[in-house]
Amino acid sequence: MTSQPKTWIHLCLLAAVGMLIVWGSLMKVSSQQTPAAAPNYPEYRFNPHVPMLNGIQQTRKDPWLWLENGRVKLGLNLEYGGAVCWLSKAGSDFNLVNWHDPGRQIQTSYFGEDSYPVSESGYRLWKWNPVQAGDVRGNRSPVIAFKEEKNHLWVRCQPLNWGAMESAVSLRGKSDPGPAPAEAFMDVDATLDGPVVKLTFGLTYWGTESHGNCTFEMPAVYTVAPLTRYWTYTGNHPWTNEPAEDLSDKVPPNMTIKQFEHKATEQWGAWLTPQGFGLTAYQPDATTFSAGTFYPPPGTVNLDAPRDAHWGRADHCHYLGGFRHLPIDQWHCRYEWDLYLMVGELAEARRVITQDLRHAPKLRANGPAPVN
Image (tube, rainbow, N blue to C red; front, side, top):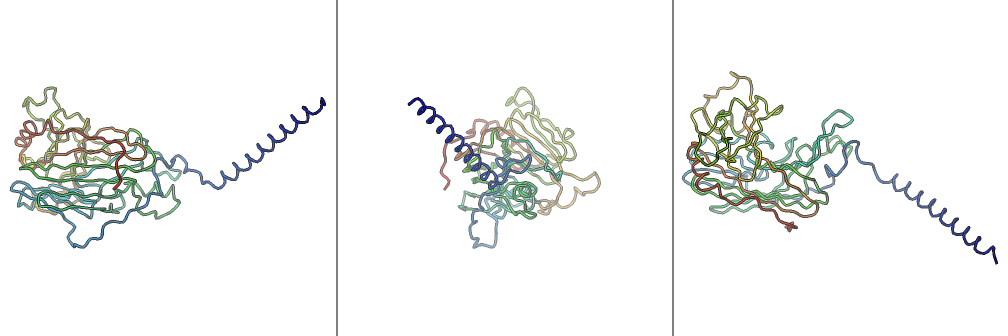
């Protein structure tokens, strides 16, 4: 009788040991079947398995969507995810927008919170970075839908991750990975009101990973080379008509190395010709602004050349960006924000911003958003 409890205890111990052995074997098999994440580049930074959605079948040969009134002419291009590729005075062929490659235009992009790691081959791997127009290899973001009305344009695309090349090579083990679509939709909604172009940008994220406190580039504005002077206001007394500031000398000569980051206390920036004509952008939600230039040494470009559309496709350009940090969480989230553009003299643009736009609606953030 006294031996029965001991036998029972022994049986329990043996069963427990057996379960541990089986569990360990299963774990070993599971770990062998599951591929490890790429060194120094976990997949939450860049999901290589997002499907590319089918773009709409273009029945028109012309990829441009146009709005024009008596003051301004705007062109969205369906071959670049609906990004702004043309902005000029009405009736003018002097396009102020540089659209040399899918990283230019007037568009939006988003940067994940993580840093830029370096792969074992020595290349810098790109973070999660959906871009409206396309990626660094020239692939274009597919347009999912668009509307073209008399006084209104709307385009939705599935953005591509900008630095897909090295990142996808490391994760997929392919030498030619192709485009890497993001788990998101980007919208742009365009209307004109006198001299003002209003663009409402939207982001619908439907991924399964959180990307932390992301950097919103809201927007990226790339202008043509003849607009050589950068103006803004950084003073402590905004909206009091204090003089605007020409800060062109603070803008570094190569934006790929360094940019001029600053607080624009009236939340606008302008790239102008030396004569004072150009493009002013007002972004009421940005907390930081950045100006840059991609420009050859003096004397290698003739700025007195005819001011026609060829500047839009030239490599030389100037840049203005507004930035803000906001979370992009897993599953569904939706952001909308507005950008206001004006073509012409800075004095008029600043007056319109001060009198009509400074109290415009701010960024809108929604909870779970429908994907369709």
